[in-house]
Length: 342
Ligand code: NAI
Image (cartoon, rainbow, N blue to C red; front, side):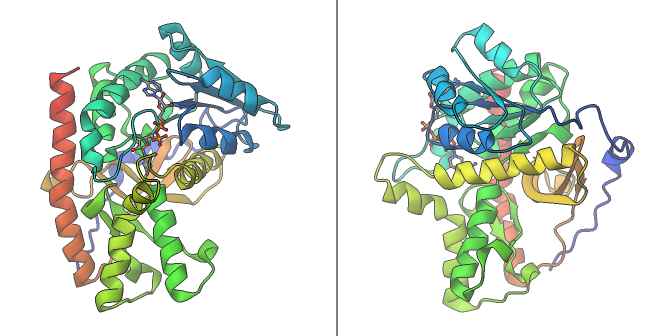
């Protein structure tokens, strides 16, 4: 058990500004990697969201086609696809309130998320540079794996350009929460819509730590181990089932759209919007873990409040200890690589 009561005063002053200029109903949302397995259904779901007024789609191939297709859907938002040129990406990003980044390569069977590091690190670095130049104040939502490293890479790029705002950078871990909630509902025959399992840590294997105890559940023995394994390695189930044709795309699109919706709700003034997400976090900084996913309250300025982890069982603390060790390595790897390859 290790409840950590860390004060969130770092974010104090700005947090109290009730309603910022971004809190309007005109929300431009940009998707980078929009023609991919995640990008297409994600763009489709965003087109169905009445909070989105403009949808800007970019990819190294095929974004104008996806945009033309989606633009026929009878909701009000304007949809534009952009060509893979420096001007295209710039225009796509300019004025964006939210930028979702699912650009990159997905896993094949037998691969870990870390195996994607070099390829996706470069892709995310370059897109982060474009975003830092064109829309430094946007909320940046990193989906491309390994999230534990691509988020620090993005932060370092923004820092190098003097525009880093820790309250506006998010690693999307919503799919872990979605899985944790769905899997417990299958075990307990409950309505998954009513389950909201807190998942903390990072977004790969042992860094994914579901906190069942906080939802009032106590699984034991093999059932508990299997549940935790399934939450931690749910992505592998999909990679294997697709047999080399990609990783989770449809469930991920839903999770990404849900996280974007939460940010839009919070930007448009709704209070108490809380999602676990991987952010620049004070919770374990004393142990050298500079980014961490925990329950985060969202607001018009992005991160409003980072909630402490709270009460955990001895078993969950064991998972957390392993998580912190792995996570520290993943974060440092991203930071080191991008500093050498900026
Ligand atoms: P995909 O290969 O189907 O699509 C990726 C898209 O990115 C392609 O359309 C490609 O043309 C585009 N792209 C590549 N380089 C680009 C660049 N420089 N600029 C713009 N677009 C570029 O892959 P999929 O399945 O959509 O997965 C994308 C990423 O999301 C992968 O890294 C995957 O590991 C990650 N992922 C993350 C999850 C999460 O929970 N955060 C869950 C599932 C996947």
